Image 1 (cartoon, each protein chain N blue to C red):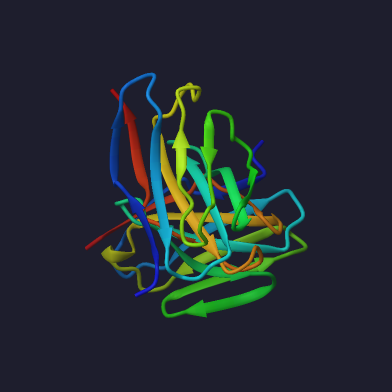
Image 2 (tube, helix red, strand yellow):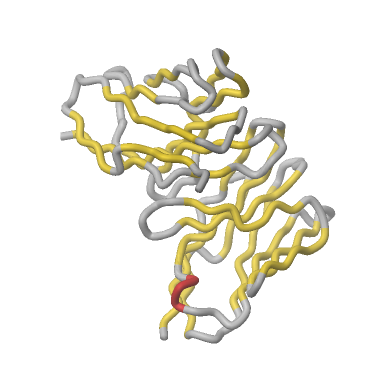
Length: 112
Length: 108
C-alpha cells in the first residue's frame, strides 16, 4: 500500500541538540510539506518542496532546515536555533499543489 | 481574528445523532478541505470542495462561496467518528490555511 511514513513516532531531544525527523513517501508525489501543530492552533507550514533539489520556506521556517535529494524523501532537521521545538510535526505530500494532500501519522517531539 | 474559524470547538453527541461542524473563512480561496485527525495524530483527507456539495458514505460536505462558509455533516454518527475535524482553505498553489479543529466525541 502506498503512503507516507514518518519516523520515529515519538522523539526526545536534549536542549541544544539538532534532531532530524524522517518523512518517506512511496506515492510518487512531486510535492512534499512539513507542518507543525501546537495545541489550540491550526497546522502551520514550515517548509515545502515542489520538486527534487528545490524547497521553499513556509510561514515558520526559522530554526528548521530541510533537504530534498530524492523524490521520496523530505527530512526535517530541528536545529538548536528553534526556541520552542516541542510540538507535533506532520509531513504531507501531493501529486501537485492543487491536489489534496496525503498526511503521515506525525512525530511528537519533546525537549528533555 | 483567524482567517479560518471553526465552530464548535468541542462537540459531544450520542450515537445516531446528526452532526454539523461549521467553517467560515475570510480570504479568497480556490478550494476547501475537510480533514479528519485520529487520536494518534494521523490525518486523513475527507473532502476537497470548490463549490456545491459532496457526499461520501455518511459524510456530507457543502460550501457556499458567496457566504465564505462550509459545513461538514455526519449522519447516523458512530463512536468511531470520534476525532478532530479540521477545515483548511487553499489560498494559493502551495498554501493551505488551517482552522484549529473541532473535537468530536460520539458516545454509545
